[in-house]
Image 1 (cartoon, one colour):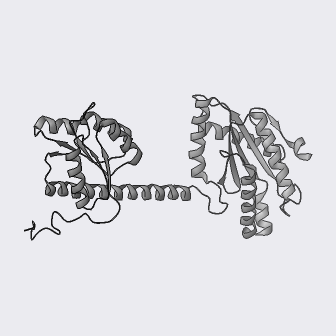
Image 2: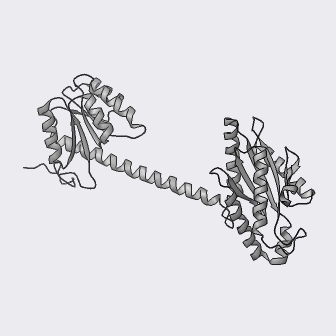
Image 3: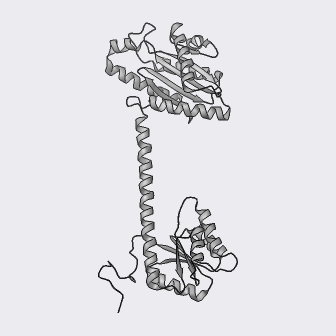
Length: 344
């Protein structure tokens, strides 16, 4: 009469449920014992069964196929099952596959040693079909829970990543906002310090933008800011170049691995591109189109360099550009403006 219990949802010899393929690697050097195990596994509904009679073959199959469960004999020719389990654990790199040891010995020391090298459970040969089925169900439940946790963790990580991207984007222009700018500048200073490469920071301010809003209205002002955002994205062609909206009509550009001469070349190109774009600015005392002023600082960061010091130098350079008539870029380190270059 089949084993049954009024409290059990299924008899112990019932096949495993078919949620997904469940693979088992059987490592046993005795062909008859291995065949008996395989037969029991097939009766339990396991269709994907891998077989090995020695440690090296088991490791090869484990790395190539990544089974869901390993039934591993302790006594193997050559390296024993303890060594095989340890090698399997070292090859997983953070992953986890249940390992159940098989042995004809029933000593506490064997159990302890098996757990120490990375095993999860222990079965004494000859293996009882009912006990084997119970172990299979238990290990499968653990795998199901782990898969759900991994999936939930991945979803949570993706959601956090998207949330961080959302909170670091300026809603109007689509550029990086001040929060994102602060984080990126800090990271780029660390990277430039580590690599010994120059880092350029550029602060830009739209000239007389209050007069633009007064003359054209805030709706047109927002449209103008969006257009400038598009222009800045166009000039930031390298993967690590970052354009951000620093606040109001002020923008900031982070240009890694950009020396002083390259920074001035970049500034001239930006000024010329804005000139060609010819965004109407009827209220500007500098002409009929929108212009901007910029302050530049470039350095190879050392231990004293931080975001605050770079922003301060770029801000001082921006103040100098404005003091000298606007519509120009001024380099803090080179004490040079680009007015002549912008005229050509």
